[in-house]
Length: 328
Image 1 (cartoon, rainbow, N blue to C red):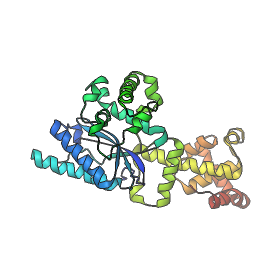
Image 2 (cartoon, one colour):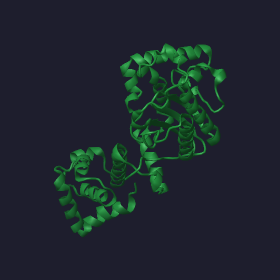
Image 3 (cartoon, rainbow, N blue to C red):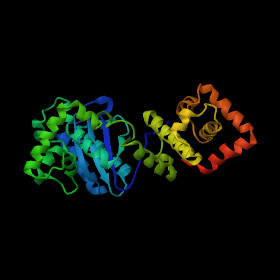
């Protein structure tokens, strides 16, 4: 069975999430919260991570970390196993603590990091555990450290949230204005939608289509299958990015545009050529191909491709040329 996509890159920023097994409450008191926080801080020191933000709830956690050394997998393995060992030893219990492997989303820093940090900071508010004004007293969050600069560790960076809230300064006045910003954000549905709050925990990447295509291309070029496997929604999204990359490359090579896709005949030889490229180099189904290339009924795609490949001249002009010159 495919495992969840794991991406490691130097300087990468990640949103990391995991929950208690069967959604059980793991962090049931200050002792459990404090133990996890200690393990997290040790992991940051051991791995050289920069902690952009975090929030530990009762049954799950959110971490936003930057990995200058590209050692996410090692660090998360150490963090979760160390916490589990200490938890079992202290509480004298056995069994699985977390519901599975942690979820990891690589983050497009310029466009999405700020919104993600606001999302993480507002977790206790969404859960009804406190009000925005009460967040300053929620001890197990980077927001608490943002409000208490003298307690910050050297590996913490609270500037991302302040900067993304209108370029606020890390001063008493700036931190108060950030609370006001979170209060506004917590009540404005449109603003939260614009910041993509509903996508913060979905898929394998938090970013634009171009960012995801760039990351995926890098992973495919590495050829490291253990870190480049997908499942579920991540698999569907990754596949479509690959298929779209082939189509865009073929269109550019042939001098065609999306306007030509709409205006030219469904059975155009060049469309059949792109379809043959997709069939040879990807797992794109006929339903996706016909929709993307405007080729009519899905069952017609195979017929158009077969007819193209039977014609030696057309095969050389379109299929062979595209397969030779187009890469993912």
